Length: 253
Length: 253
Image (cartoon, rainbow over all chains, first blue to last red; front, side, top):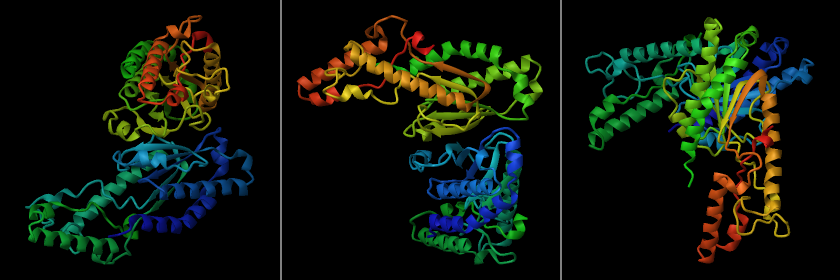
């Protein structure tokens, strides 16, 4: 359907320039090493199993090292510790087995949802997340009740659905992104940096016009056809909804 | 042969009192939180897949919390971050899936050998290792050469072997434990604590008298018998040696 790893890869390449800029402009090197020698800690939230997460982490470290060097602090270069995070069910065994052998960082894996807390207070210098924040913490509950105006019969997503369905998704996204940002606000050090790379839709565009929306429309139609042919049940289609939301820039600011 | 998890469990219980004492006597709570709010970071090196590692980590956290409370610093209680370490081939997926749901710490997994560096400088408050340090980084090379006096024909271990074999193991252990301690010396904060729980042999006792030694003697005899019956080759027995060493207290001080 959608080649997510390739999209992620393209996204990672596009975002490299942003990362370089953020680190070059915003990273306060002096403040960093005035507070005793500490490592520079980076987290990739929703890392999956690589290799995109390895490329992203290397980009960030390159940019930080560049900043230290350009400011004349090459002799104070920090050590790097990278925290690879994804759900507990992520294949961390494969992730660990494929870590770049010559990596310039100490690697750790962090199991758990980024919709909850993952790290101690003030313990991260840089948070990165790529093509992960579109995942909601759960399907909005209203979609699953037959008595609700948001009951999503014959569809698996909010694209091309009644307003109530889209609204339920929007509310769930707003809750989730708030929890996400509150968690990270506690986990980042003062002066910490964050780069979030996620699929989006232009302000004001209809949900059905996004690539994601179109794809899930097609998936929904396929499942309805399969139900008509008796391959799956209608109840299964009606109760299945994809917990993915594509936000607009306005919703993120 | 040997029920390692049960031995580890028994060891963990026995060592709980030691951990309690070390934390009660040596942990400098005032110094810990005078240096700005930071988490208390604990590593279990050679953690395997649980549940012993979870019990050990809980013991340590209980003892630290007890110390903070008894000194009147309950309101400054740190957050805890636990680093579960083992070889990259350890089953971290299973470890993560079986983490205690109500754990009072943020969990991470750290893939890699504790014979090398695993963490940034000054990044751990407490290092724990239980029934792991008996594993050498490799079989001593002299054992594998037919021309060496330490060629270990017809045996899989140094117990009941010529002195040259035992000596090769002793030298390898000395190298490995030195590398281990040098790494940890860099990774621990000033005032950091370490508890190492490992199988041992009384000073001066012959290697063949240890439970481990006896077990591998029997294993060696079994393999030789299998070779005689043609089930495996003699070359396979001669080239197989278990990279485990049981040290005496004298060797650890």
